[in-house]
Every structure is written in structure tokens, then in C-alpha cells.
Length: 86
Picture (tube, rainbow, N blue to C red):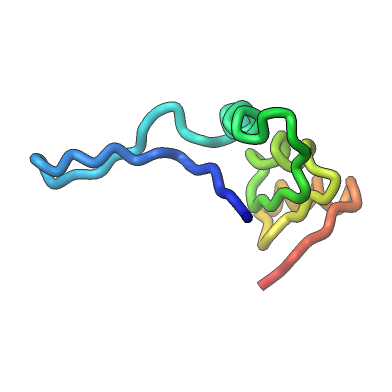
């Protein structure tokens, strides 16, 4: 029942290449895509590892910083969010 929202890839088999489709799924773009996917439903938990994930983590009643970079670690500690290390 879990779903993930990531940056789509563009596969060009005739050229043998794969590239990232824009816009990249980060920050406010990640929130926009997530809200569209949720379609009014609640977000149960959110997991992030960088400062760019803060807008998404703020949507969740259970934000979790996973092996966070130092910037997200500071935010998570200040806000009392759960932190998971390795």
C-alpha cells in the first residue's frame, strides 16, 4: 500500500540514454506532486534526508529524518522530529 513519488526518467532507447525529466522532484515541486497524488487524503508519514525535504516533512504528522545531512539534522532536532541513523 505504500507509494513513492520520484523524478521521472526519460528513456531514449534509440540513443541508449536515460535523462532526468524536468522539473526535478525536490522542495516545493515534491510537495506539489505529493499533494496531487494524495488527492485530499492524509499523509501518514514522510521520510527525508536533506534540507530540501523539509517542505514535504512539514506535511506529515510523523516526519522522519533518515541519515540526515547536517542542515536537516539541525531542523529535525529543533522541531523534535524522529531521526533514524544507519
